[in-house]
Image (cartoon, rainbow over all chains, first blue to last red; front, side, top):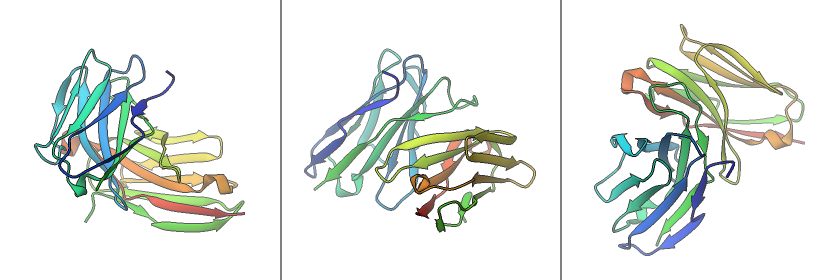
Length: 116
Length: 110
């Protein structure tokens, strides 16, 4: 497609359940980023992929959060044993190259996660 | 103190007014982004700057590296410009992490 896509657009889950969020970057973009935006808060960096590897995982808030990227394309962010404080909009972005380069990031529409 | 500060936090203006949103940062940067987040939540990247000035339609972005300051200007503002405008920097001081400002909420009245 023409832009970054994410699925699902909305996810409501019960506390303690696991969730998977998916991101399809723009074709040819080697760098992929995950962010989250909690209600009333600014954007928070979670993790960055260059190809299939994640040089920077420092933003992941706890070991319940993990992410992978396969084939240098689709990425999945997994949250295990969800907590209410995980409720947020999770945003994915992609760019032509990674952190060390001056490449513009293109954002997906986000996944709104609500943990009851 | 936040490493990226935006001002004002909120701005309401009449249609047609010239708008300026400011961003100051305290870290060394390799690039600065201006983003627009619409009321529905979607984010659009407006500009990426490492020096000088860029213009796109009614939007102008400037950066002064020495003063660690950037401005986003909107000429002939329109109600459809109503959104949250976010400044973000890529900081070589912080291992190339991206640090976001808290955003400026702009409301243009018809």
